[in-house]
Image (tube, rainbow, N blue to C red; front, side, top):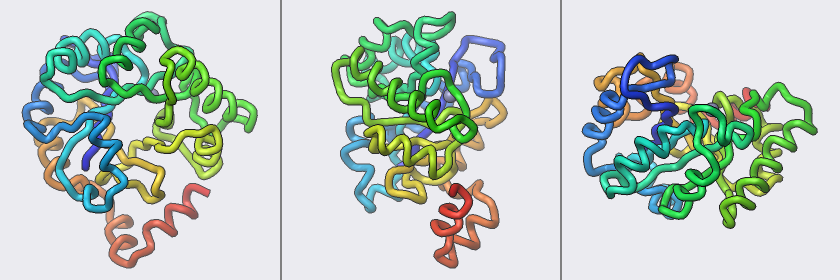
Amino acid sequence: MIVLNYHELVSASPSNAWCLTHKAFDAHLALCGGTLVSPRTFLETCDDPKASRTSEVLLTFDDGFLSDYTHVYARYAATGKIPGFMSFIPVDFVGAPGRMNWQMIEELSRNGITVGSHGMAHLDLTTVSDAQLEREVSVSKAVLEDRLGQQVALFAFPYGRFSQRVWEAALRAGYTRLFTIQLGNHRGFESFLYSRLCLTNGMDAEYMRQHLLDPDAMRGLAWKISTRLGLYRSLMRVRYR
Ligand SMILES: [Zn+2]
């Protein structure tokens, strides 16, 4: 399966590279066609090695932008045009200008949208102290679970930045699936890591078409060689130690 990662969607004039227009998002949805899967289907099948190479697509959104609610949920999920998505929330941003408030997040969670944690203050977790790391992963989980009345088992690393110390803290806190922004199909180099393509407005529909055909196509030579030699996982373990 293929996991896509979006941020804010706007009608026009994106303010940064990770902000996409509604038109660009529509073009991506058209390319995905009938291959979109719900978070529930994804979570039920993602551990099956046979699911590894299927072309089904899961949508995820990071940072708790208002457009998760006003655009993606209201226009697509609530009307049945897409089968749902994952929304990763940085808890300190809830209710800030341009971000969802708790009522919206609670509504998403009640209606088939899977809510995960994106930490508290959206920090690069590879640079924070052990105490701060603990707070980012544990307090965000506790606050979300308290608000939503259900377990929160998914975590997305802010800026896609992680290390072994970071993933061990997240696993200790009780998360079972951790989302990166590495290329490739959904299965990461560890069983609890999940790869995603992070979309920027510099990627056109052709880039997306290529990615949907082969999510490994854009990976570098080092990946290709180390994978062929069966060394990729060992190399990644050294890199992220
Ligand atoms: Zn983020």
